[in-house]
Image 1 (spheres, helix red, strand yellow):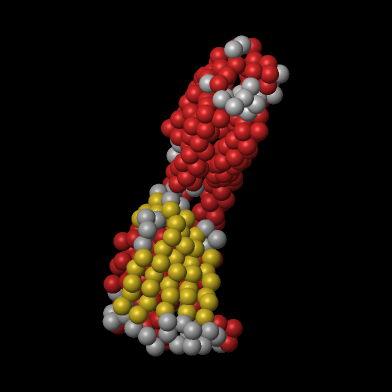
Image 2: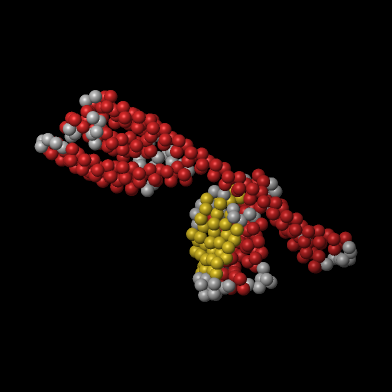
Length: 379
């Protein structure tokens, strides 16, 4: 059941609206059956049978349609206002449907029927619609009973129910706001942790390449021009160029990058491995996207080298600032717990890389049952 009101925004508010829909169905269907039975039992004059037959049948048919419509489309303003109009019409005709003694004693079955309509309006509509709608029902009941003051109980019901719904809705929205702020704070913390990890990785690259080469030159290890030195310097230059392109500050971490083109490129570089992509629109901070795509590329290379199959599937779910990517194959599989410590491909290139960026990686596999690698960010 999906509500269409714009006020239903956060998950708590949506859950309340979903429950309100079922509550409205129960009120209308249960009320129609109960009040129809009461109306028949309360009819003391023979002529009442002719008056009661048509409106009570109409009430039951409308209640069934109301339940079907709410179940299909939610508590939309249109169906709620039509419901109020139907019940108001019955209330205007209550002198022909209810014995005069019951109306005078305020024991008419029309009173709780109007109450259910007021409840439904308060839980389904904004106050700018629900309060005027309730006023129309109150006036219709007062006119139908012959005295407007008979609607005082409905006025009290409107005030109480409107206040209660406002408190509940306000609490739900406040809870959604707190949860959203907490998630955003956690995302920023993980992004900062990933940035620092990236800086440490760059420092290690400098130490292992450029600084090492300069140290060897300063120590006189290359007294003459050397092909090995030229090759090492060329590799070091590529490292420096890569560091120059890498993000240098948190401002670039705040910029989100679309993941789909990078995943398509990674899938296209797997040679004769056929990769089926199931992509959705996902955006991540650029450094995180690069690391996640690198993990996907490593997982696909592992499929090609070890799985004994020429097919794999990459499934993406997520949105702005988060992603879950599954790489699945139906190959020979393996026992992750039995992998030797010397095999560092998955441990470093996938699990280690995701942990360093504040993400998470999981490998599910067993011999003969294929393998699923799941990488996600944030963890």
